[in-house]
Image 1: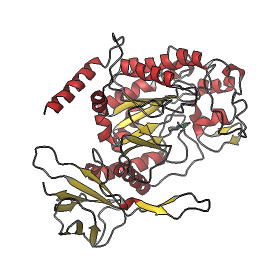
Image 2: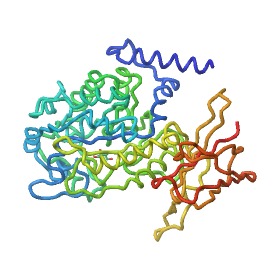
Image 3: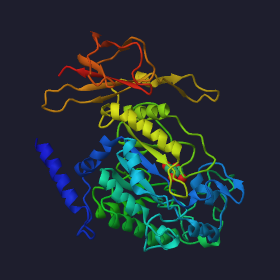
Image 4: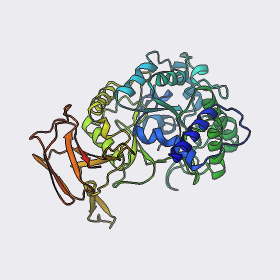
Length: 474
Ligand code: FHN
C-alpha cells in the first residue's frame, strides 16, 4: 500500500511538472519515476507509426526511374539536389488529410498510441517550425500543421501521441549527418554528400536545428507520450544524446524516449531492428517497429501487403515475448492512408475487440517451448532457429487482494482438434473458456500434475486466432 502511495505521488508530481518550460534544476530521473511514466506503454502493446513527408509525392519514382527499397530514402537514393527537393514542398498540398480519420483508424485498429514523423532524414519538418523555414506551414501551399491537428484528434480519443525525430541525419541542413554506407566498398562511403549545401559542422546543425526543433515539439503540442529518435550514427555521442534526453525530460518529465537516441544512452525502452521479432521471450521493455508492406513512406508500386492473419500472429508473437508492436502506415501525397492498410488494420481491430483482454496489459509467456527450438547450423556453421507457430501464450496476474485468479491466454493459430494439451503448467486450472464465446461457457478440463488438457469444440471459432482463457485457482 505504501508502495502504491509513493507511486501515486510520483505520478502527481510528474504530471504537475509536465509543462514546466524553465525548471530550476534538471528533472530527476529516478527508477520510480521511470516506471511510472512507462506504465501506460506497458499496457498499450499496439501502436500506430506514421511515416509521412515530401517523399510521399515521388512515391518511389524520380525522373522516370523507380527506386528499390524504402520510399522515404528517395532523396538519398536518387541523390536529389536540395533545390529540386525543395520544389516538392511547393507542390505538397495534401488536402485530403483528415486528422480525425487517421486517429479514428488507429482507434478502430485497437492501437493505443500514435507516433508520426515530425522530421525524417530529408530534413523537412511536418510541423510549423520557427527554427527552420523548410517546414509544412511555411514552405507548402497546404500551410496547415498536421501535428497540431493530430495531437488534438488523438487527445479526443484517449490515444497517446508522440513524434519521430531524425536527430542525427538531416540531408537538407548544413552539417546534418548522412549515412556513410556499411563498409569501405560501399559507393557512398568516400563522400556521402551530394550537394554542397550539405557541407557544414554537425555540432552547429545539432545545436541550431535539432535541439531547438525538439524543444518546439515538446513545447507547442500538449503532452507528448514518446519521442522516437532514429539512426543515431557515430556523431550521436553520449554527450549529445544526454543533452537531448535532458531537454525532453526537462520539458516533459512523463515523455518516453525510445531506444535509438545514441551512444550507450539508456532510454526508456529498447527498439528492436525494423521488422525484427526475437526468437524467444525477452525481459525488459522493447518494441518492434514494422511495416505493412516493404516501405515506411508511401510508394506507389509497393503492393506487397501483409495479410491480417499474419499481422495478428505478429502482434501476439511479440506480446507473448514481452514486447510492443509499432505498426506503420505510409499516407500518400494527398494525405490518404492507402485503402489496403485501412482494411487490414480494421480486421486486426475487429479481432482485438473480441480478444483484446488477452493482449492489453498482458505479460509474456511463462512457457517457452511453443516458440520453437535451435535448428541445425547452416552451411557456414551459423546457428539457426526453427520457429513453431501453433500457439502462443500471455498471462495476467491475479489482481492483488481481489481474491481473483491469474489467467493464462492461449492463442491457437492452428486448431488442435478437440483437445488442447499443454505441459509445464504451474498452479491449478479452475476454469477454461473461449473468448470468442460471449457466454464464456466452461470447457471440460483434465489436469495431471503440470499437464493440462482442455476439450474444445471441433472447429475454431475465430479464423484469425482463437483465444482460450484458462483461469487458475487463487
Ligand atoms: O532510416 C530509417 C527508416 O527510414 C525508417 O524511419 C525506420 C523506421 O524504424 N528507421 C530507420 C531505419 O532503421
